[in-house]
Length: 104
Length: 152
Image 1 (cartoon, chains in turn orange, purple):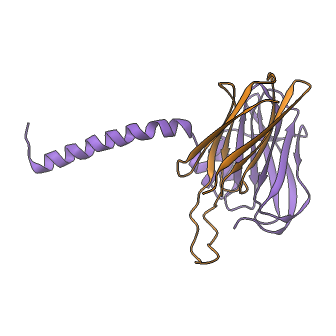
Image 2: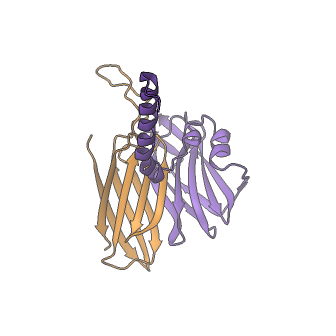
């Protein structure tokens, strides 16, 4: 399973906008493998937690119908250049991944 | 203590159950994921399970940014903006999807009233955004025409 988290931030008028792509198949459990015809088991990100420094600023609960390689964007205030934003997710099989970025 | 074989096995099993429960606990603490709401097959059932006992009021202080007509239902860019005060959460539902509850975002006071993501839409459907503000639920709905469904 290819994984990876890409994070971009931009700050304007004291509002920091975070854009992220979380590499994940987001399999619904309803589609079939085109070669074998077998159902591909469900495997999708269920929770995402975003931290500014060590403070949680946003949490997400996702179902299977968030698109493959999920895109997430939101904005928050109170950040300074050089602060960190960390994104971590957990999927329906208990896999986790986490990545930190420095706010621009 | 009475050391019969049966007694020993049952003690072993209960000991194992305690150990497994201990191992699972930290995972459950991280993922407080509402299985019943996300597996619900109708919008009303999903809402009843996700927001038990709360009524939803239509509001024009919420906008859903999504194209009226999308070609590929597998990747539908969508953003929700709201002017409502003290936002606790923003949820997205697609009425005609097999499981209508798509996502919920829990905001903190530092967050602006905005989230964006990309979702799968199986067939032409109403998309509803539900914003929890000051403990009450407000909604807005937008119909999206889909040429090729994306729930595969």
